Image (cartoon, rainbow, N blue to C red):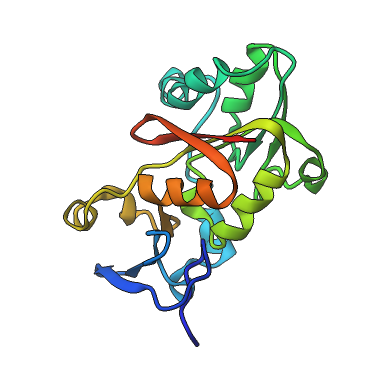
Length: 212
């Protein structure tokens, strides 16, 4: 079986790092760092990890954390904008923050809010906070999100970014067994160009894409 990049599908990624549990490869085309599919958790194991998350809209610290994406994104939106929080988790919070600001929101999560009907609509903005690092097929799934945006719409992503191989080797982010894809600024810039999007980085773990 030839190994391929799960974002751009190019073959023969280079070996990048190994720890006690997993191997990591990096794509020469898009620079994504990823764990090979045969080392991913199965769906039951993955959900068991997420069930331990204690996020809730009543947690002011969690709201402050999400504010790193909410604040720069809300400043771009017209008051009539309708949004989707993709991968909302067991305690949807970002969608509540947008609703409190007067926006109409839908939520989707494959484990906790699997209403596929919401994926058949178009949105002015889509958020994915701490989601893309969990995607087994990010190329396919992120492309589908772009298709659900209206022209001029925004995709807001929050995920910690890869910097150097040295930093990666000591990075706490790779210790979570549900984290299987690791993006860098270069990866996001490459991906934006492929999809005709512009991208800006309001923070070191946030990216906002605009569809033209």
